Length: 452
Image 1: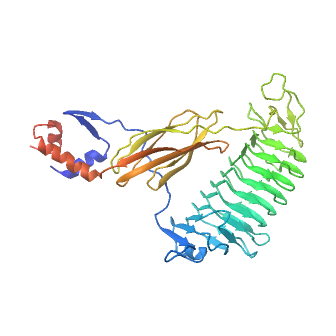
Image 2 (image 1 turned 45 degrees about the vertical axis):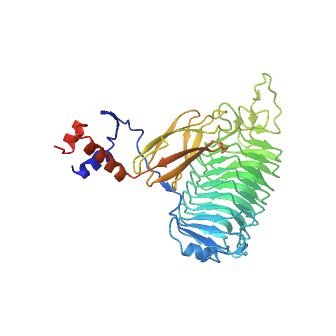
Image 3 (image 1 turned 120 degrees about the horizontal axis):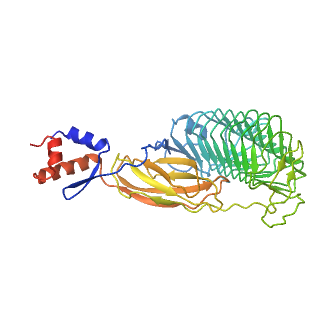
């Protein structure tokens, strides 16, 4: 028998399940898609700590890394007086965001990133030079900047010519300006605490177009909470808390049209909003909460009977909320799929979650083998999300999945343990032995594979 023929037979998907001498074809799932996002290449450098070969400086560890490396920084040598330059795709992880400090010494950007797929978490970035940044993404796409602290930088955080980034769970405080996006599209800003910046908390300007999502952020600053300026179009602002700003909570000007603004809480700003452009201040069902709204709710549905007029150019919130908006988190997702498999054979998994508010949801999946799916969606609440994954080595892997809604509110984590016991060559060998052990069985396969 030619084993190459059997290998082809198995690899093209005509996999069979036999019960006695009856063959039942296994129905293939959705289109096989190997995960495009490896967590790392398995190589890690350490900075600080007491391990042999650990680096003293973060930049030295970066200079001796290549794409896919992880750099873990201990806090025992903090603060690190450095100005980082990152031009490779790495995972940069600090031990604790409050105690792992990178200090720019007031001589430049604390960290300057020019590569795609850079993930940074667990640091404090402080003391940039005047007119420089705590962190600057420059022509950097598909980065994740999460769970960091930016304090006392002139520009706390700049994103310039950079698309498809996720910026979440950061504290951005006590700078001249907080978070600044320019010429940057399709970015997601979730659950950032942007407070006590002197001039403005969040500024989006200069052709930052096309569906950037700003959700569940807190904007509490000296003068302006947030502004859109110079052709910022088709962005979505939902679930933000914009409060106690000294001049204007949200200011929109200079050709910033077709932005969607709803389910935000505007609370006790000197002026809650100002919009001289043409934007949508409600979803068609719900608008925003305005602390200075004076209308009534005669039918008790939680929506004001009369529109709230936005100062500037006659825009209206047609469905103003009578109480501050509170969003409920999605349910922990279910996982349905095989718990046993074979190396290099795709397995189909079905995920499902229901959002109690009916919001669209996004799935984040860790496969347990070094690959992940970063926030796949949007998927309608209650709709199955089906995806294939191929495990490429033997072992026991724990799939972890969570969801978040369009406001950035996350569910609990669901898990499923999957065992990949043997490689495909082993199964081919066993299959051959079965055919040889029962010479009168499986006549079709005996003819197909050349047994006489």
